[in-house]
Each structure stands twice: as structure tokens, then as C-alpha cells.
Image 1 (cartoon, protein in one colour):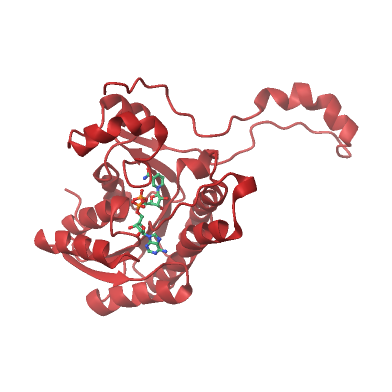
Image 2: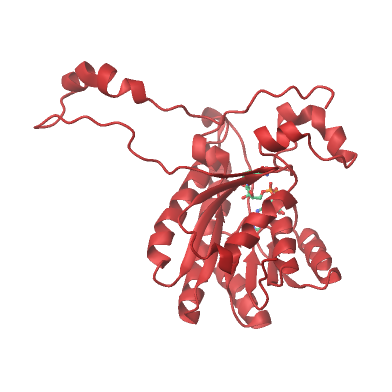
Length: 305
Ligand SMILES: NC(=O)c1ccc[n+]([C@@H]2O[C@H](COP(=O)([O-])OP(=O)(O)OC[C@H]3O[C@@H](n4cnc5c(N)ncnc54)[C@H](O)[C@@H]3O)[C@@H](O)[C@H]2O)c1
């Protein structure tokens, strides 16, 4: 079993859903955990679950986004447990609207929570980990919506794409300090996903405690939050030391690696490209390589599941 004894982790947004599963799994592996959430009841329940199982955890109630909150989370880890080894920036919120109906407030809240929250928490963690001089792990949280784009998610897909970009940049910047930085791309049945119309036939089944059908777990990579927690423990452990700058998918029965954006076609014209020259060569040189976009769901027959 991979052990994290003596390590200290912060998990933002761990009052329910995926964050709770990460916090519980990190604690079960031996880490001491600062459980953050803006919901005090949820955070308290996560701490209670960890301590009831013999683990160590404290709650720090605050909304991530501002620098002062990030600094307080790191200070709490130091105050309670003397160090910081793992920062998981999981806190998140949705405000879905199509572009032409999205308000400034909906845009700002999602960007503030996900993108700024990840930036401020990772920065505070990087400062502490560099000072400690013993390496560390920063695990940020992307989404298929950020990797592919998704209808109605202007704010969220931009934040999540930005977070995947953070991981690539910070992996470069923190390599010397032996701090790895990876984006995980989780998919799980939580408050965020259980309202997706395609899954409506499954709600009762999950409420009966029967779990999700194999096809959903494998083709859609959707299982329970606990199914995503092993990846966080792996990345936090010594076994994950060589992994950095990656976007790693996890959900249900499926573990995957996402590609990073890369040039897929190019053509050269000495002296540069006029609009007319582009029009002339587009069809032959570039058009065959045009990329698909949007999350692609495998067709599944869920009626009667
Ligand atoms: N569920 C999925 O399939 C899925 C897919 C891709 C990405 N994600 C990402 O995983 C993360 C967790 O998602 P989830 O499905 O567990 O969501 P969730 O809504 O069940 O849990 C999110 C938690 O974050 C907390 N939170 C919200 N804003 C906060 C803030 N400013 N500060 C601190 N806590 C805050 C909420 O109170 C809640 O407890 C999010 O970043 C989400 O975008 C989830």
C-alpha cells in the first residue's frame, strides 16, 4: 500500500463530493489533512469521517480565491502539523449559461473560485514547499470541459483550460525544487454531474446504493468520487515522484492520459502568408487536419439501467 505517513495535505472544497473523497483517501494513507470548504457543515463531516477512522484532520472554513485565504490554509497546515507536502486545489462551483446570457457575476464567480483559487493556493504552497526544500506535490483539477469545450460553460471551460495550462507552466518552474504539478481530469457522480440530463435514468439506481452500470464506468468514465481518489494518493506518494506537467483522466473504471495541445499541421511559404495565399492553400494543407471540439459522450442505452 502506498503510504503518506508524516505528510501534510490541504484539500480545498473537501466538504463534499470529490474533495471529500480525496481528503479521506489521503488521510487513510497516513497524511494529516487540512479540510477546506466554505460550507462549515460539510467540512465538519469530512473531518469527523477522517478522525472516526483514526486519521488526522482539521477544518479551515473559507472561500478560496483571495490570497489571504490561500495563505491561511498554508498557515493552518504549518500551525497544526508543522509542514506542507501536498496541495490539492479542488474547490469549484458552476454557473452555466450560454455566452449571450452569461452575466459578469456568473463569469467572475467561476473564474475567481477555480482559476484564481487555484493560482493563489498553488502560489502559497509553492512558496512554502520551496522554503522547506524537500519537494512537494501540487495537484490541480481540470475538467473534460476545459480540455474539449462544453456547451453552456464559457466561464468553467476557460477556467479549467487555464488550470491545465497552469500545470504545464508550474511543472517547468518548480522542477528544480522537486515539486511536481499535475492536472487531474476527474469525472464522477456528484452534485455537479447527477443533474446532467443523460444520466436522469440512473438517479434512482444510485440512490438505492447500486452504483453505476459498467458501461457508464468504462465508456463515460463516471463512477463514484472514491473512484478518483487513488490517483490523488498515487500522485502525492513517492511512486508519483516522476510524474509532472501532465493532465491525467480518472473516473469509474478508467484511468487515462490527455494530450497537450500541439501543432498538428503546418506549411511554409517563404516571405509569409497573405490572406489570398492562405485561401489558396487552406483546403489542401490545413483543412484535412481540422480538430474536433466539445465533449464526446459514447452512446449508451441507459433506459432500464
Ligand atoms: N464531478 C465531476 O464529474 C467533475 C468533472 C470534472 C471536474 N470536476 C471538478 O472537481 C472539483 C470538485 O467537483 P465536485 O463534483 O466534487 O463538486 P461539488 O459541487 O460536489 O463540490 C465542490 C465543493 O467545493 C466547495 N466550494 C465551492 N466554492 C468554494 C470556495 N470558493 N472555497 C472553498 N470551497 C468551495 C463546495 O462547497 C463543495 O463542497 C471541481 O473543481 C470540479 O470542477 C468535477
